[in-house]
Every structure is written in C-alpha cells, then in structure tokens.
Length: 151
Image (cartoon, rainbow, N blue to C red; front, top):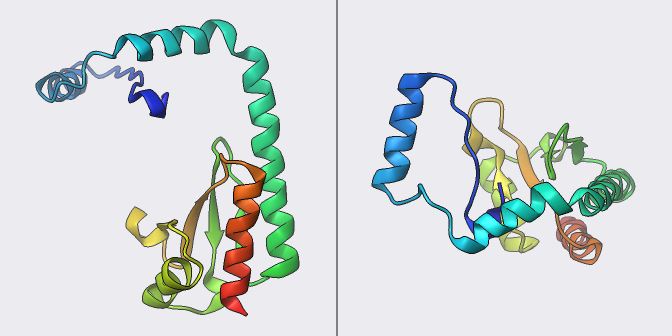
C-alpha cells in the first residue's frame, strides 16, 4: 500500500471472492494504477531497503516517545504497542469518560482528529487510534495539546 499514490496490491486466494473483489475494483475504475504509482511500487521493491530500515527505527522511536510521554504526563491513557503498524491504540478507559466526553476531549478541547475506537466495533469502547507515522515535532505537539486539554 502506497497511500499517497492511491495504489496497493491484493492477493485473494479464494477464486469466487477474488472475482467479486476485482469486479468491484474494475467497475469503480480502481483496477489500474497511474504511471507514478507503478514507478513508486517498483522503487519501493527495488530501492527502499535502507529507507525502510530507517523508517521502522523512526516509527519505533515514536512509539517509545508516546509510551514515555503518556506514562509521565497522562497516566490515565495507556498506549497499546502496535505489532506491525504505525497506529497505536490509546486505552483511555482510565479517564472514565463516555464516548461523547472522550470525543469532546480529543476533538474540541485538544483539537486532535483521532479515530474513535467504537467505530471499529465491539471492544473499541474507550479507545482512540493515534497515527505515529509523522514527525516527532508534530507528535509532540499533539500529545502536549492532549495533556493541556486535561489540565
């Protein structure tokens, strides 16, 4: 998946499901990448090993930063370490807020647009999803806003 190029691969082993899925892609004109997307995919496979290693190290350091910041500044929010992503689930149940209050905290008071865990189904209550695939400066700004909104 190369989101900025609106391009990704899908491997669907089940023949019936594959036909339905690719039929949907074709009918909605999502079945052919742009020339830039194709070139980006080629470069990703052939020339990105060093970049990928650096990116993974940077993302891991952002995960550590969030973990330490929350532990020190907002102990009512516990991050759930991602297993294979740059998206961290924030367990906000320690704040004892209902859904409306939690969204008010993030959206109106902290001015942050995170994903509400309840949007992902049962078990998501009290969670918010944070993207740490960004600069440390931006991540720190977001966490400071959240901390300050709780003061």
